[in-house]
Image (cartoon, rainbow, N blue to C red; front, top):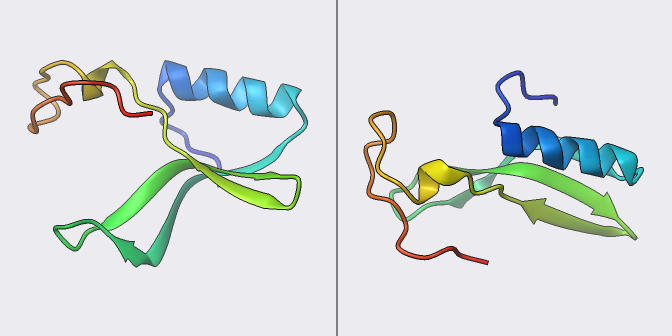
Length: 80
């Protein structure tokens, strides 16, 4: 599924994945995978590479700075 509302960082990831010839899906979730608040977790990308599925989440600046859009506090340090 292609996401119509990609961030600029997600667009760059898509360009890289396509250039690398990798198969991927965007905005994937799994019904059995829930947050501590019992909400479905969604990942930006599911990449199929060498018979392995890799989940990717692109962390844009909204994860590290206060925002009027996102009402949760930012992370204090990047999570690898």
